Length: 196
Image (cartoon, rainbow, N blue to C red; front, side):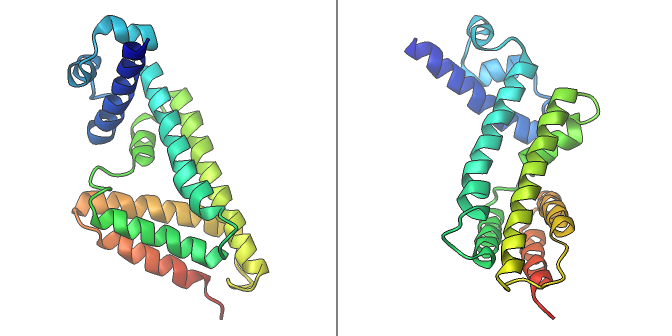
C-alpha cells in the first residue's frame, strides 16, 4: 500500500508540473508515466483517465491556494484589511521576482485552455475564481467599514477587478519574462483603495 500511495503522489506532482508548463491537452499520459516512473497499471489503479487525474490536480491546487492565500491572508482577521492586501501583494511581488510566474497561473492557464471544451473543468474553475472574488470582497467590505478604504468603494466590482488584474499581471509576467507587471499591478491596486 505504501508503494501505491507513493505512485499516486508521484502522478499528481508530475502531472501538476507538466500541465502548468505545457498545458493539459498537449501533455500526454505516456509523458506523465515516463516522468513519474509509474507504470500504466498503477495509473489506472488510482485514476480512470487523464481527465480524472487533471481534476484531482486542480482540486489540490485549489485547496493549496485557499489555505495559503484566501484563508492564510485575505481572511486572516488578526490583521487589518489593508495589511492583508499589502501582505498579498508583497507575496505576489516576491513570487514574481523568484520566477514563480514563469509559466503563468495554473488556474488562468487551465481556464484559457479548457473552458468551453471541458464543462467539469469550467465549473470548478468558475467556482474557484468566485470564491477568490468573494474573499477579496469581504476584505474590502471590512476595510470600508473600518475607514481604511474609501467609503464610496464598490466592493463587489473592485473585487472582480482585482482578481482580473492579478490574473492579467501574471499573464504579462509570463509573456515578458520579468516581474514588472506584478509590481505595477500591486502598487496601482492599493492606490485605488485610498480615500479622497
